[in-house]
Image (cartoon, rainbow, N blue to C red):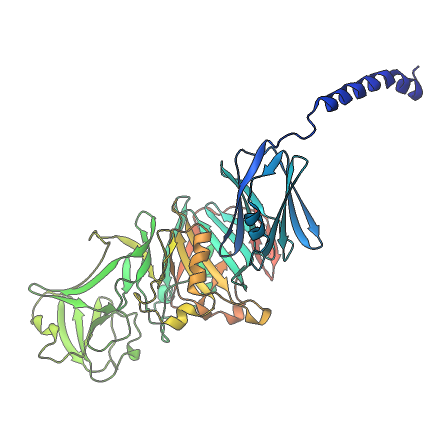
Length: 508
């Protein structure tokens, strides 16, 4: 029987031999081995709600080790077998970074290793990626980690608290892959009873059983649609700005965002009379048309010539709408243009007249839209910030003020991005300007994006739960965008405030 002591004695000669071999290796190693790779450049890129540091090396380093020091908050990155070829001037510049999160980067090379220190104003570990040429360290300005919840196939929700230009805000982001059995469509408040002019977004969500509902285009006090709206293939409303941007869902379910021309006209045997807008508050000097779903009592009650279009025939009715009730297939045509120059004179008694509305792209191709919601202004075109406030007649104070926002965008792969920015001033959180909103959309991967109605109308309902506001503060709106999965993922749920959401499938 071999005791513990005898075992130690048995292996002692082997240990001595190993020590001799190790000593020989140390003696044979050069005293100061030259670093295998060198840091050649450090670039700091500021973005909407993160700061990214690019580290360029002449060859890929062997290994990176990270740690964190708390006094002061300093993220340390040690790179083995690496040196630096940065100039003293560049190192000095890195010591004076003017940013609310990252204030300094220190560079120190010793013993064949390179140490990089990132001085931060809060505890913040970066996301690290390598693109084949450089390492990228992305420090999110979020006060907590982003949480991603998979709602259904092709639908996920992200939530984060972030900062843009020292302004805090809460961001809710839904990513949608229309190709994965997802229905995306617009809906108006009167969809379910033919009467209701404005409805809370949460009401739409309950009736549809939808994963996501957001507020849509602009609307008036009486619930008039102030933006283009196509619902179930029927053009419900067009605005007086026919080339304002819109989100379109084709018959095949493809989603597009951009500028499309909407032309509405009364077409007769010998006349084609342009209509300025459908179901839009009357504008003097225009010819406009209304159907049974428009609140006729909100139209002017004097100085307007109202005509009834029914069964292809048009006749004069009155100068006011009181007492007029439109039935199915009846349209009201309004104009205050003097009779001698009124284009409606070109329609003669007995003419067969039809209302025709066509949506076309820039090349004149007709777009068969199943759904469409208009917005303004454009935020992103070609992957760059492009805010068309003047072009789309958006007031400057609306564009530049910091408020809650709702926006939609598309990625190069065709993913639909839906974003709502929450404004909670009482808790030190504010909204964002349109410029900031555009940058947020780009940061999330959008190559094209547009703004929807915002401020108090901004709302996102996910799995029946209002995300950005309390239900008691929810504002009824005239139309929404609905995202509905054909096959909902079955998962356990976590209770929150009396309602339930799927437990996050991915957390990072």
